[in-house]
Image (cartoon, rainbow, N blue to C red; front, side):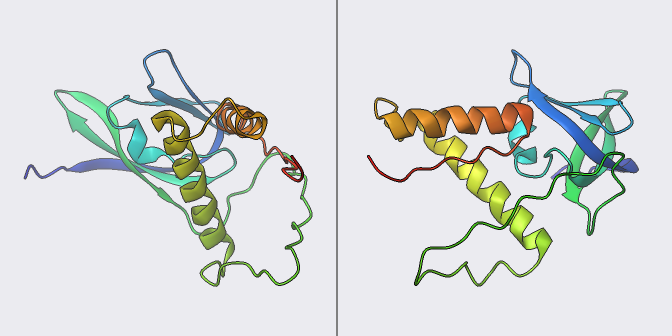
Length: 159
């Protein structure tokens, strides 16, 4: 296996995340600097590079060009220039409890990231029947979430 030498590291707070027509992962930090991860490596960053998340980027060099080798979630949060609106915690139905593995805010962020990634896999693989109204709504909310980074609350009761 080829050993990779990390040339530098940088801790940023992610502002916006999107993909271009080649499926490269593009994101900006709160300082306005744009970062890019090629489409072949972008899937490794799903669930880590999310809006308003503190991330440590490790850079390496290949063929004379610097690239983002990997990213890690940073413990705690970095200062954000504008305050975020807090959403009230969702109420669980009677008799149901939250998973025991969710104990800290970081664990919850990781749990949400994994869920979003799995939902994306279901949508991309065709396992979600988009002919059903709720499935269309879930698909639309998923794409809205990953393109804008805003949380969308959907009421799936009834039907």
